[in-house]
Image (cartoon, rainbow, N blue to C red; front, side):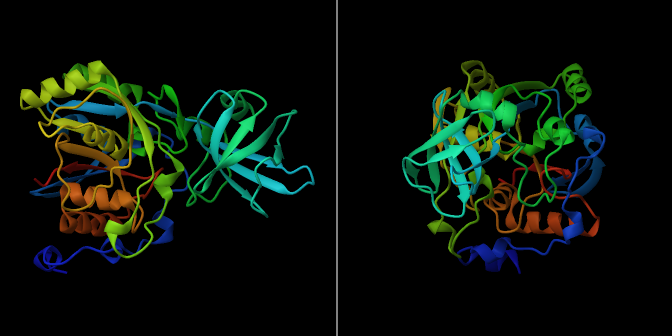
Length: 349
């Protein structure tokens, strides 16, 4: 479809669909994080590289922004007092013993019902928020998850979590527990690459956005304007905000490592293109036509058909540019999704 035709009508969900051979969905991480491929998507064309080549694509004045969220072992398996199986996916820890969770069971649990887990751990359903349930545990939630939880691998990964996933579905710079999905662009970075970037003079800062289960939520309905984005908590430290603002004023490029870093920065941006420090919730839904105030370049993985993240990267680099990049990646047998390969995208405008 011609770019002019797209510009003349409202984009719908069908504009973000594509056929992906199932064998291109990466089921396991590569032995070496940095061995992933890197597709550089630039106005002058596409370049097939290795992730280790990233340092050569960054200038010493570029500022990298990482998301330091840490994936929690958010999936718990338990049972009802009558023996019925229960699977809980903790979306967010609200208090020491209170969590918001998706609950899968044969019948919708009623307020006041109990769920039994291992080692005397149990939770009581205290209410409901949309698709989520409030679970009050008899112990510290994070301690329970660390002891009994499973890595919340995405639904397109077909194997149960293992010790490999405990290590590899986590960035090497993860620090603040709270995510139920990894900020996957960061999975490619190794201590060696980070050291090389630092020696090269590339600066970096960290923010936190706790990725929620809603990241896999499909867009319901053909019209994008009708989609309600899930809420995610983020925090930008004062030092990080200051570094970003100083870089922008100096005309230096801001490079977001992952869509989560980009969403946090753009959510905190003012009309003056300054970033506000502090913590907040974001429901920002970025679609073609959205204005980018802060981020100039984006490191990201390949995203699912019809997903909000595919819409985000299409907004960033252009619908036709992303279509061409994805068609090229499929033809060249790139690995897709969380354990897959990466792209470096340049902002279209």
